Image (tube, rainbow, N blue to C red):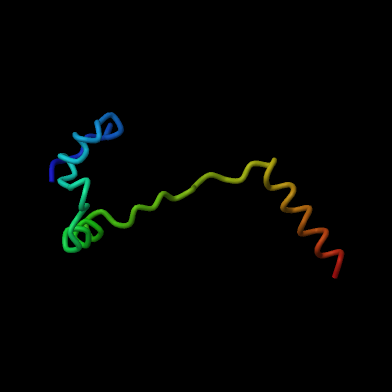
Length: 70
């Protein structure tokens, strides 16, 4: 497989298929998918952002209310 340019989002679909060496109709064979999973890991994006106060405040107030209802 060719080395993927860091600006992969600039590729056309056709270019991406060539670079990733895959078939748009059939995708990857199981063996190739397993190898890529081992090589690159799962396709997961970690959310490292902290909650803003706008979203954190209502959550805190719900916890306080539920504690008072006990």
